[in-house]
Image (cartoon, rainbow, N blue to C red; front, side, top):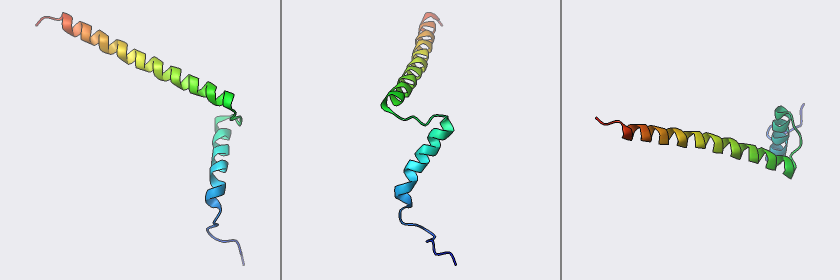
Length: 71
């Protein structure tokens, strides 16, 4: 007979680090120091800034074209 409990009480305390470690393994990196996190944050910030800049340029272009058309 198996004596291990079906729902162990310490699952919540053990699960987050295991999930985080598996997530890092799936990403192909196990380093999670401050430098690597900062580098990833910079990349995300720059990508968001680039895409936001593209949308702003498109919006301004459409507004300029729209105001130059006389109906």
